[in-house]
Image (cartoon, rainbow, N blue to C red; front, side, top):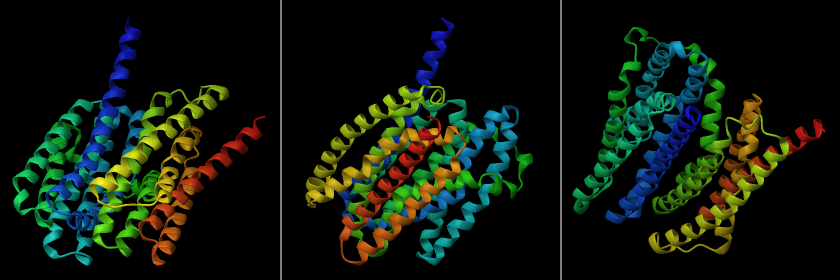
Length: 394
């Protein structure tokens, strides 16, 4: 009976965490649809420029925070409060410093809202580590649903005069309120006696940071390049399509989550079966996603793309379902640096391909080709690594 209860608790925790992550992604995808419905694509496209800025500085502020802390918590559970507090206060000044960089790119009135926005994300991302470790996923679900609902109500309230100012103000407050809500629940994990900056943290967590930011850039660098080369309307279209594609790719992680803890003890034949199952799931999910992208592009964005565009988008999604387990195996063997190297190659090829094609008037299909090329390159590198490893043990 005890075993059954233990299994049920684990299933419940995995289920709630999956719901939490899916809800967060779905809400993020839904926001541009609401914004465009109440205004126009150019408003969302202008907002995406600010969004991309905050996303990159959030990656820098996080600096591998979640991955580093979760691993440290498991090794030193008796020092959770001190460890969390030290990392929290070490990273906190980055929120102000990096937000201030916005003065180089944006109007002065925006910087305060960018800081509020960044601070909210800093708090949410910081306490997410505690939330995951303590398995308090229901709190997160309530917070996400509550404040998304309030954000939508704010959009509806100002729908007659909806503009970029209303969007930035409401979205910044939305992020700050979420962050403060997490703070109000988990503030007991902050030790005020640990208010100091530990510069050693940046050295210790550097590889976690590289994994995080390269993973982010692999899927988003083409979006940054679209922002550089194309107009706000096109940027709006591509951001929505990119979000749908990346969300579909993230579903691969939810499928193999049940195998994570036992993957290294599973026999090779069983792992091959899991890989085939994941790939078949990927085929079905990818086709379904492309159908959705077609309807969104045609009937919501009022844009038509060629068959080649959707074929390229299909191969943008599919590779992650083929290489997901391979990355997991490298993590289990402690070969994070190999994954970092492959992701770096992906970012480089994505950047070069996207710039070359967009500079030669290929429009957003050029950026999509860049992203797809990166995914296929990572797939080839990981499969080559897996093949060489299999040859070495036979």
